[in-house]
Length: 122
Image (cartoon, rainbow, N blue to C red; front, side, top):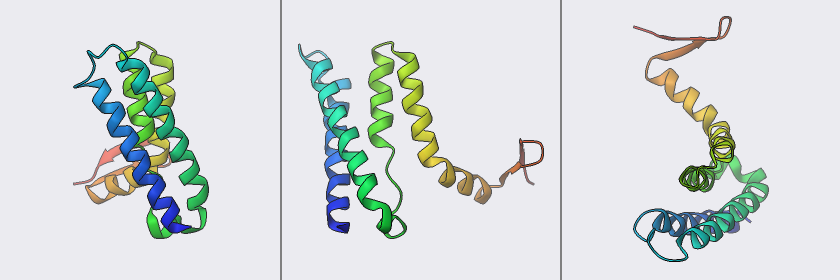
């Protein structure tokens, strides 16, 4: 099962790469937007399946990657669908939040839980 999760993550990354190509180098192709949308929807679906399967192995293989949703947000921004892009970005942040908070502690930033204020520690 762990192998399947890893394989799905790699497949998700491949779909994201295809989507990114249509957002950049291939953006002038006649079907670029449709092809990008198709690839990114596949990436999101594969990522969701990997998340479900990774449950017992998450501590060994790490949390879900934010790539699919972040790339989908880029597509939505290019389509001027800002509300949908924001949804994708917020979900991406929620997936990365624990890691971001841990990293901020390592580099000297901390959150004052009582007041919800971030302070730089010197």
